[in-house]
Length: 247
Image (tube, rainbow, N blue to C red; front, side):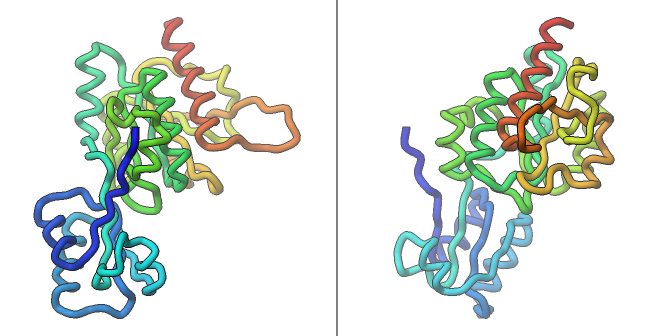
C-alpha cells in the first residue's frame, strides 16, 4: 500500500485547510515573514495548538512539493486522530480492561509506526502521543505500522502527565519503562493498564515518571545497556499480554 505525504503549501491553501478543520501537525513559516496573510495563518494555527516552526527558505524548499509555497508549508496528518474517550470506549465495547500505550516524546517515525503495529497485535485499545516534541501520524509512520493505523486509534494530547492523571480517575494505573525500575517479571501487570514508553534518548521525562505507579525494567545481559524504544515497547507489552491471559 502506498501512503501519500500530506504537504500543503501556499498561503490560501494552508489557511483554507485550517478553516476546514484539517488536522495540521506542523506549520513551517519563512523566518521573518509576518505580513497580513501570514498573521492570519498563525492565528488559525494557535487556535488548534499546531506546532509552528520558523525556518529558512532552503528548509521550506525541501519540504514543499513545488517552488510556490509563498513562505508557508503545512504538514497534515496522514490519518485522523482519535480522542482519548474513543480509546476507552473501544475497551468498553470489547468488555475488556483498558490497555493503552502512552508515548512520551517519541521522535522517530519508524519507532512510532512499529509501536502502533505492536499495539494492534497485542490487543491494546489505543495509543496516546503528545502534540509537541514528538512525531505525528505521517506517511512514514503509516507505512511502518503495516496498516495498523487503520485499526488502532491514536489520540494526540497537549499534556501527557495531565492525561495520565485523568485516566487514573477512570481506574487505570500506569507502568513506565526505565532501566532502574523493578524487573518486569516481578510486577503485577494485569487490570486496566497504561504502558508508558519514553523518548529514544532521554527516556520517560521526570514529570511523567512521577505520575506512574511503577517503573519496569527489562532484564538485559549484553554489553550495551538499552533497547530501541519500539523493541522495549514490544517486550513489555507482551509481558502484559502474558499476564492478562493468565489472569
